[in-house]
Length: 137
Image 1 (tube, rainbow, N blue to C red):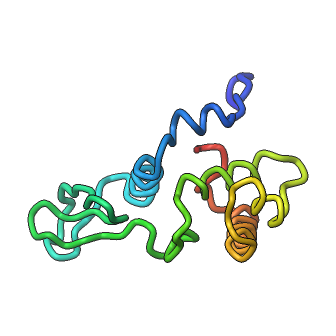
Image 2: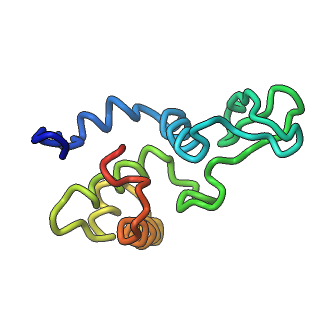
């Protein structure tokens, strides 16, 4: 809090407005990982990239090299929609006592194995000092 201003809570309504679909979630991850733009390893410069339809990657407009924003994140190789991940992360971060994997299974309609993986990885992420979801979502 700066200058005595109170920080506003990030609500479910805010989540719905800011992240209406998986593309909005992917765009946020891309912008968070590369705030100055994606540097193409082939062109060796920051170039314009466009999203490849029906895939979770961006392609360089000049050489066609593809970049995957989810690589190396908790979302990597997950078939669960990003929107569901964002909802689970928000719920776990915003509730005082958290939620269980069984509750994730019931509320989000995923298998217990998926719910447990999401729970475990989100808990690990929230325990780190990484600013990825610390009030900036």
